[in-house]
Amino acid sequence: MIDEEDLALVHALQVRPRASWTELGEVLGCTPATAARRWERLADTGSAWVTAVPGPNCVALTAYVGLRCAPGTREEVAAALAGDPAAVTVEITAGSHDLLVEVITADLASFGRYLLDRVERLPGVTGSTVAIATDVVTEASRWRLDALAPGQSAALGRADRPGGVPGRSLTELDRRLLTGLGRDGRLPWHQLGQAAGTSAATARRRTERLLGSGEAALRCDVAGPLFERPVTVSLWARVPAPELVAVARHLAAVPSVRFVATTAARENLLVTLWLRRAEEVHRLEADLAARHPDVLVQDRTIALRTAKRMGRLFDASGHGVGSVPLAPWAEPAPR
Image 1: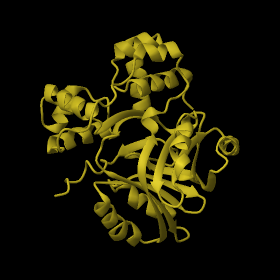
Image 2 (image 1 turned 30 degrees about the horizontal axis):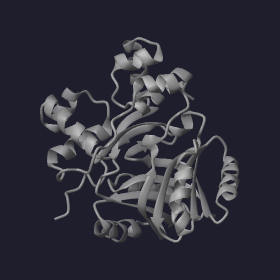
Image 3 (image 1 turned 90 degrees about the vertical axis):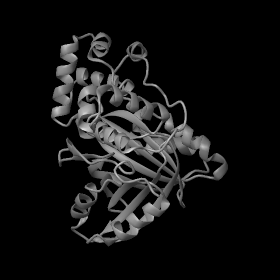
């Protein structure tokens, strides 16, 4: 477990992922050096990290693939997929499938090739189900720990929200910048520029354009087993079409919900929760049934182990140990 001061620092960086140490120190009541030292320890131990993820205006296809595996092969299949840029999140699960994989590719054709030529041909994979996202209603860059007072969060302000759609195609420099920010979203501008082969000023200007356009977003994340919500549960629900938007928005406001997406599948709503105990899922379902009686939860999966989350690789204890560049940034744009 990480202590309250560390949780407060993580919460502050969820609000402002690139806030300066001076700004963080003022809000948290410590010196800038203390804030920096605490973060260095969290990052070095893989307990928390800031990373770049696809933003709301990233032109890409997102799909959720449930895999069934031959007995004894789940860990091998998960390890193989964890090295793929397209498989951004890989969970070993208990439920109707053995693995749950979030896949991001440039388009539907790219996804089809990846699924048919790579995923389904892996030794050990015996079957798959696919749900293609139609809208990501909320995701983990908007999720917050409950570790700051409202006044502290207000003092930090908030990260700039996207102001429009991307104005042009990504360049190779953009991809290098996003890859660097995927490894460490708080890299100083001069270090990011060196890694991408450009100046600090150019790195900052282009990164701010990528974030401002909604192509990318920065998020601060924490290793799930290290704080009070170690249980990850995913719910697959069937919602009448006229109610889908209202139900998705209701769930997006629930504190334990980290992710909500609508999908073009039989179960047209996917919800991911971080819970203190698995039995808490029943209370959420009961509340959902009371508010929206026509919603049917059709399936539930519990993550036994997360091999990878949004490009971050984990060891068996749940600590981050590395990263893989995310598709579609890691692959050439389609011609």
